[in-house]
Image 1 (cartoon, rainbow, N blue to C red):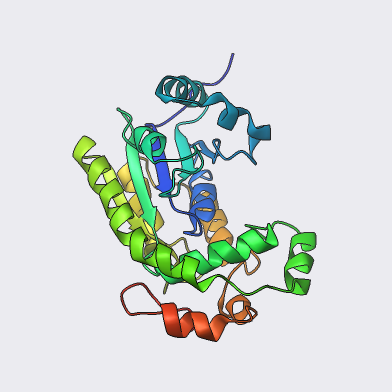
Image 2 (spheres, helix red, strand yellow):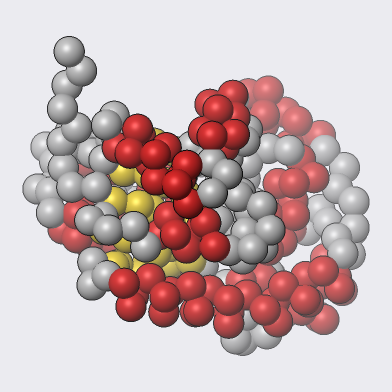
Length: 256
């Protein structure tokens, strides 16, 4: 007989390149949390969960099956509707399901998020999981990035994300807005980020034992975990043009 799933159901609802995988892995080090990572991404689980969802009904059925094994779902979405196809309806339907807590994860430096996404798309590597990934990353020759594409997405993202946040907030009071910067910027080494403790309190679970805390801290201190940084941005041939044409105090800079 399968062990009952502990803890209250939640969703980590996030844009790409916001540190969501590290956060989900840290949460999974807590004994009361089982968070499945991106089940609706067609690259994961041999695409079976992605293929199962075609409409609202099939989404509810698939989520119910996942909830029998996991109390958390880490879901990466895009304003275009990905991973469910055109439109944002199913993403918002997933985020507004009843009886779940929502961690709404974004990144204040939108420019870095967009450029990091494009870098990972070129590499076809989103996490440096192995020495082979690191060798591929070190030897890769990046192509120029599409500045007009970046400018279009910079213009639209803030409004689209806010509209999504407003819709979720209107459907539940159990929502925790969180940003990449809350977790990863100016954090102390050798201990988990303070924001992780805020997430645990939001989820209603106790602070784990010292060993779990040490494992969480080691995850965030791993020098190989981060794909994109100033060093990788500087390897983009037209990076100075991107910085001058797309950077701003509102949507962020790459090299400042």
